[in-house]
Amino acid sequence: MRGSQSPAVMNRRADGINAWNDIVLESFSGSSVDAAASEFPAELARCSIEELNFICVESQPSQVHRWATERPSGSSGIALLHLQDTGQGVNHQCGHSVPLAPGNGVLCNPDQQYTVDFKTPYRMFIVELPIRRIAGRRPMFDLEQDAGLGVNAHKSRMLLSLLRSAWSEFEFLGDDEDWRQCVSRAGVELALGALGGVSCPRPVGPSMELRRAVIEHIRCHIDDPNLRPSAIAAKFGVSRRTIQSVFEKMSTTPSAYILDERLRAAVEMLREEKGSRTITDVALSSGFSDSAYFSRCFHKKFGVPPRLYMKR
Image (cartoon, rainbow, N blue to C red):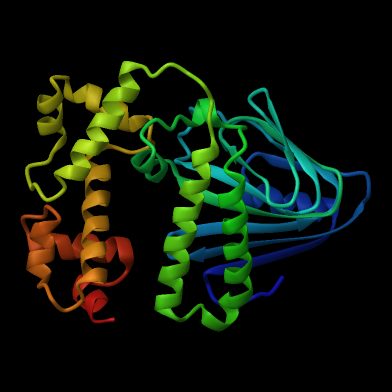
């Protein structure tokens, strides 16, 4: 692996199984590794490029366990996309066993127990995806039922290629904002696209239908400053508590989801229409009635004020 001194990259190496277990436990809560050999050269690297967060693991034949947490399923707020780059293994979770050959991927729930048997030395990329992003793109997504299933092989291979390139180029291009944004957007889109291959036949209940309708309503009315949980509840003839429960299953709240979507819409406007719109116009068009509040929220999420972001 290639490293970097950038704070966006973290590298850890081990030569023995005990040291490797310490590294794995630090990076993956509730995890442990069993291996026959005490000498155990292995390496773990974590990389963050804008919204794209992934871990690259190179290790020896072993059995990796992740134990169920005491938290409710999905409360960690993320799903894990395991992508096999080299070597062979089998992923076991929720009664599903998915063979892992180079290019294969599987969706994992970090709050439920699973095991991965690696029969050979291997390299794996693990992408962390916020559940709210997945559900926003795929309203029928249910991590509890989809965990342990294989993903779209074509998209997973494309994503693997992108991750390899991003990792090898980060040392040289990590300070280039355009490069980071392109890699992040492409990586997140490919990861979400890979989940299109996840399919667990199940009836579509009223709660799923409501989630899909609510998300579509938010997307179509994101410019409405009166788009609030109470207004959404009134629109669909349900209680505010019902709307809250829809978003609890996405590990977020209605207000947080709406704010996130407003900021996402604002970023798209700033990227696509650089210099052609004022900050106030962008704020109003993304549903903020106060441009000062918009600027504070934008700065908090993206690390720079919108005016500076627009000038880049």
